[in-house]
Image (cartoon, rainbow, N blue to C red; front, side, top):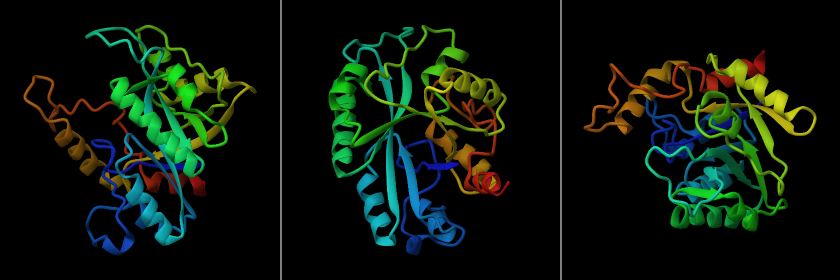
Length: 256
């Protein structure tokens, strides 16, 4: 099983930091790298929604003798030049682009820059293809918010994944959510013997007891003044109905 860590640099998504273990205080916020060191991990897989924490994470990983595998989780669409209209049904789904080496890190930066300077945070398949090199990058399809997830649970326009220029890795998860079983079946049915599948665990916090703190953090990040603002009484947190998005759950699965 692949442990997919996410840090506070993906704002509103995780309460883990990337602080060096020596800077972690007892009773304070847990760190991805402190967890890795305490549990003897040789590599850290970090999947972020932005690149702002990459250099800090790389420096700390190098200082600890850990291999950092960095992935950028990003929106992909058919045409990034088409401005999305309010209430539009255009399909946008998520992919994870992993860097295999230093050149891959440079390409990640170009992909990220292109998406946020030209596509409003999205990148289309044509632009992605122009930047993609299988020697330097690897694309994975996340379990949640993928085109399959969109097609199975949304009434919007169906999504299509153009994988003609890459060999995707499909990720499976089991976080005790009601949608996990039908989604897992859909992924396995779609992949058959044609695509690679790997079991994974998205990690937003260290232990199950941290779930309440995680929910509170998401409510704070989603604060606002509209009628849809998140509160502790009505948090409206998507995919937040399970305390299993944690390293403790990952350990339990590894030990079973």
